[in-house]
Image (cartoon, rainbow, N blue to C red; front, side):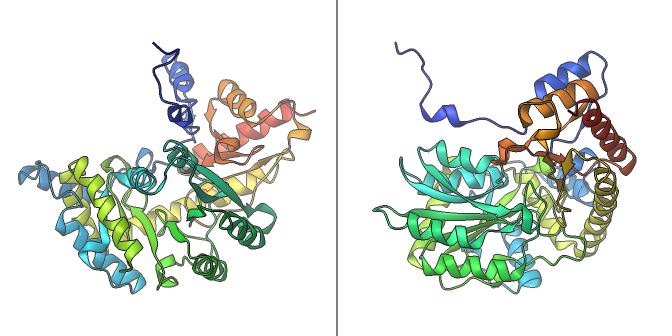
Amino acid sequence: MPASILSDASRYVFSAIREEDDFAEDLRRHGKKVVKLSSGDPALYYPTPKYIIDAYTEALRSGRTTYSRSQGVIELVDAVVERYRKRYSLALSEEDVIVTSGVAEALTFINSALIDPGDRALILRPYYTQYPVAIQMFGGRFLAGDYDEEDDWNIELDGLAKLLKKGNAGRKGIKYLLITNPNNPTGTVLPRKALEEVVGLANEHRILLISDEIYDEIVFGGARFTSVCELAGGMPYLVLNGASKAFDATGFRIGYVLAPEGDRTSNEIKRKIADYCRVRLSANTPAQYAIASAMANGAEHERTVRELVNAIERVVDSAMKLLGENECVRAVKPNGAFYIFPKIRMDRLRFKDDREFVHALLKEELVQTTRGSGFGAPDHFRMVALAPKDIMDDSIRRINGFCDRHSR
């Protein structure tokens, strides 16, 4: 028998976001009150709205508890089609929408469908932690462009253009380019002009463009969100979205993939992702009906998402003011999602790296954050700005005091 029964690819499967969870849980078992600023889960602090819970309950009472259509129940697919018609003037057919168990499953299906061992995909740092995992677990490799922290985390377009040119010069080329907007972990909403240039580069190099837009309604600070579907066309592209963030329903595990174009590549991708959906049978059936109802209930949704965004903006504004008192960290103010991603001035602190920083912060101050190196950005850490303002403010004060104690 070999030394290990595990596959080579399995060594890439881990979660930087959840790696401190066991330690935090041990602290709780010993009576410590840990503040969880590590998980992007709005339902932790803002309960899923009652009208969505009622719709879920009604689905259960109506007997909608069986396996359902593998690509998504038609009611939800039609609700997504209508959402994109109203919000982004995009004309979709039912075949263009595939429902998944969250964006996480969508990423797994896409990479399984597209990536062979040795294939490459292009992502941008800082990236959501699952992006490289989903590529590497199928034997692929990732190239990394950059968001520029000095330019408020905008895309470093010259570097991206060079990577695309160099990456497509080989025999196999690059399978896809993946961007995130609004961004996790930086909270940046990309300017329309930058997106236009990204779409132009993808078209120029004839590369599949994928845009993860799960935070598309969580925008503040005067920013305006632009969906890739408002700019792309004539070339294959995919949009990823779902109910976890704007609909405050993380545990429902409802996501979806949009493939709006009708070219050969787009149709191949749609057919194959649908095959993966059939293999796993179906997404959560009652949850699909609940989210279909929520999307149709525009007035309630607009009210609740507006309340959520306003609360997040107040928390972010206060947190940024308090962080400004700390000479050991520096943060670009976010204008979307619900994350703050400070840079740690390691030269001013007695820590060897960001992993040691976040672990010591949890151990000493009971504030759980996530190391930036897990997002491809060493010497940073991510905080989730979802806790109530008083809890978030207290956490920032603890971080500031922690940095004072450990400063050189």
